[in-house]
Length: 247
Image (cartoon, rainbow, N blue to C red; front, side, top):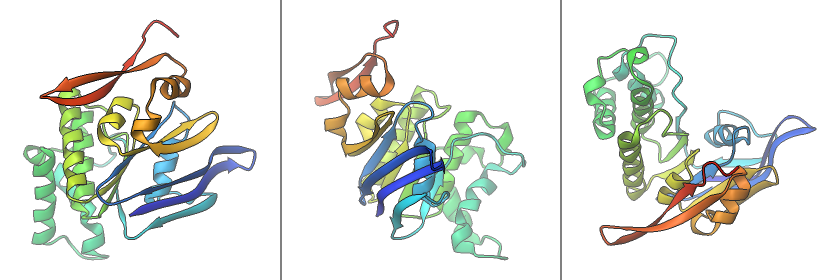
């Protein structure tokens, strides 16, 4: 489980990125963080993952969290398999080399994400979308019950977006707790149980079905947004439509 209690982050006491953010991510659920550029989504998920220390409030994790950053390439020409093996660092320990069990866990994670065929490719030679999938495999290989993802659909085409969202739903079904930031409200609508909206007026948290509304999303992004009901294979759903050309 992952819990944030009145968390705030600031670069100076007069320049708070956000304050008073509280939510809990239980096993088998997903919480999505949404907001415009510069609202602090990445900062918040990095605090949740333990990569940044909040200026105020408390972050509680029962165990470590797997972290998936946005893919920005790598200065080192590691093989994709070696990148995934890095996720096993906690199990391997200091001054030890990965063993057969670690290699098997890494290969299994790559197979699950659909990038097993890229294991011998050098990470910098992969497309942005392929790099993102390798980073997700690395976090899965870590074996943590909490997964924190910073915009996991970055650089992915529609097919791979569906692949990632389907995978995340499967991880939730397996009992994993997910926290993700996203620029795609429709992804949050499909995946998340609860959402955190970071905007100029502060942070709002609550059930996704109650907060991902026309009014709330239009106010958050400053453009007209509508939610549209649809049916697929007899199952009802909602998606997001932006009114382009109407600022």
